[in-house]
Amino acid sequence: MEYFITARDPLADFENSTHEGSYEEYMEKLGYILDKQYFIGMLFPFLVAYGLVLAVRLCLSSSQKDRRLSSSPPILDMFHDTSVVFLSIIFLLMITLGVGFFVYLGYEILDMILWILPTLVEFLRVYTETYLIVIIWYTCVRYSNVYEAGKIDLGSTFWLRTMIYAFAGVISKDMIFLVWIAIAGLSGEVLLGYFCFQVMFTNFFVFFAAIHLRQMFLGDHKEQMTPFDKLIYHQTVIVACVKYSMFAVTMFLTQFTKNSAEILLAYTVCDILLVPTAVQLSEIMAIGVKAEKIYTIESKLKEIS
Image (cartoon, rainbow, N blue to C red; front, side, top):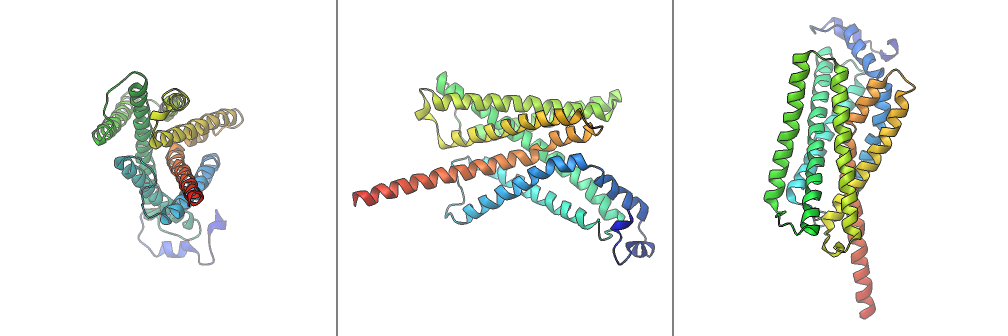
């Protein structure tokens, strides 16, 4: 690990400090991070994609008078904005961690970053899973209202209750399983297997929702479909296609490496980047459709005049 030592040896700073952790422990933790090559390599494309898509959406947003770019409910707009804030904090912590490879930050600071990062990632994982459950349930209700003459109101009360119940359900099932893991004394591999299974289970229903939305768009009731329905359809298709493609890649890589735990962990947590990326991308597509309609209307008005 000597190549991380800069012209000014951070060990000299450490020896004059009162930090509890040793410099060797500091470098050992950084080395542990570098060893996670498969985990970092699998998440890096999602990180780049999210950054690019978010940049494009912000550019389009700044050119619009109205900040809301789609007909999504306000409570979901708040949900999206919160994920952006948490991801921004995670990115800043990752940048700080990268600086720590070249500048001695102190053992306590490094230890704090390595504690805060997994906590934020876990919270965001719960957040994104909640969002997926919400749009899955919305699809079921929407399908019932269209094809089975359902009369469920899809107003703000529906969204608020659905999000509360979904968030409480996700937290409850995870806590119950963690308590069972602790009581039974099971290994970390069992915990990782649980999260992988629930990700596959959730994404199966996302794919199911995409199929039903597609059926509604192609069926006799397509005139009843709203721009928000199309927004959700695009999100479910993007998430389902990417996750099933990544599942195939994950299964392939686990056959040729001993670091299967890293690969499965990347498959589990990539939703925190994939779902916000799908949300932002669907918003960009909605802007494109809106702009095309405005251009068509303006062209017809010019022809008339």
